[in-house]
Length: 446
Image 1 (cartoon, helix red, strand yellow):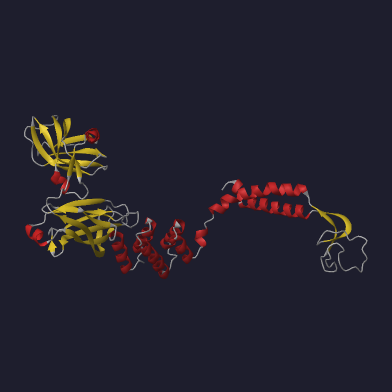
Image 2 (tube, rainbow, N blue to C red):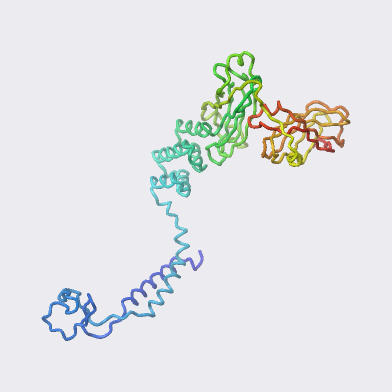
């Protein structure tokens, strides 16, 4: 602490300023005549048996109703006080701002401030949790506030609430019921969503994807989450019977999606009528303690289930599902949206993979990608990008290309593919002409 911030110096300056102000304001006595304190009238020469002031009528027989002489304020001490008081305040200000008032507040007040958006109060509650200064009843009360905040999707989520709950679990003071509620609310009702293509023609696949949108957890890597996807349901009908799972750190920054489609059988199509329908997807989530090198450690701390749902409309086959545009004014922007193409060849297997960046195309893109070598096209995978989106898109081929070698130069050809667009949830218009990136060098596998 520097000299200017010394509490002794600050205190002396403030005391001296106050003392000088009092001394200067009280002033010095001038004269020895009796003076009425009520109105300042000079009572000199008044008979001693006179009981009231002849000017204002005040009772001058009362104690302290009369003073001897007039008081004249001292200007010099007042000026000195006016100079010293701001200096004392300035030297004390760093000490006052550094004082942690939250450390002395009761838990109920900190909870109230945290619920109103005061993050310093929530940080103080977390500090007390870490050092064992909270009783079990106080922990339960703060966790209850955190879970109520987490459940209210109309309010923005502050990951510090999740930090408190997760540290309570690590400290062994979180109940199993609260942990289950915390994990379920983090993922369900907006944390993960089932997005379905809003309108599907009879005979087209029902495209859907599972997205993580607003996972209400902490920002720290304390736990590992494994989600299990059950078969998709449409009324009494069941879709993909192959279950799948995925895992990752359980944090508020979880992002991503998995896109799939369900080709309805003739039996299902014969049973359902045009109109709005609901897809349902049962999910399970297992939470584990995070291992020292990532991944899960030990058995599951909690296993919760929830259901995602999404609505879509079945329309007849003659309704347009995807429109193609070849608007000349868009051509240059579409071609310039493609950048940084790379292709790599595994000389041992002949497999080919690569990547191309797609930067904010003016319309949706749905292509079948291929390489053109010596006039022959060799198919790769489909490429789909919604209008305005920026992404890096992977390219791959798992069969050898005849005669292709490291250092060769090929063309990347993107041919419009309506079926690829129909397998997405958000592409309804696509560029209707081929896009060619010429002279791309084949690199070797690193």
